[in-house]
Length: 105
Image 1: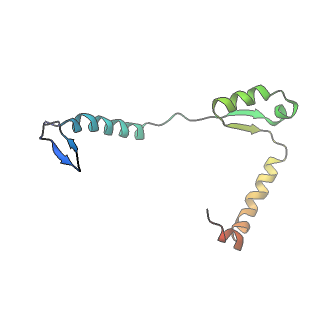
Image 2: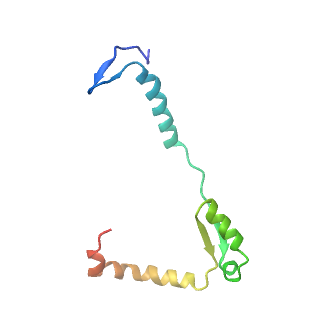
Image 3: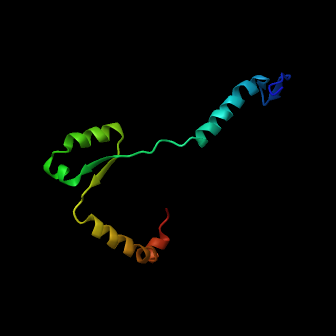
């Protein structure tokens, strides 16, 4: 049998273990393995338009999203695509500077 009874054994100063190990730890191990194998549902943050932040029309949605998940995606930021492209192009040169090499993360 998988869960045979066995005599208690001494662990350290005063702790003992017995067949209860199998009844507690085997199900816990099974649940742990299940949790690792199960795919969590994808997270999609609330997306708010930049224009709605500027004119105030999205303030209620912003407050609600921050209160529920604490994460908000802002879309339609003017000039963002060009700025992102410039920053990504400059990243290798920045990373090669002595200051960046000396920085501890």
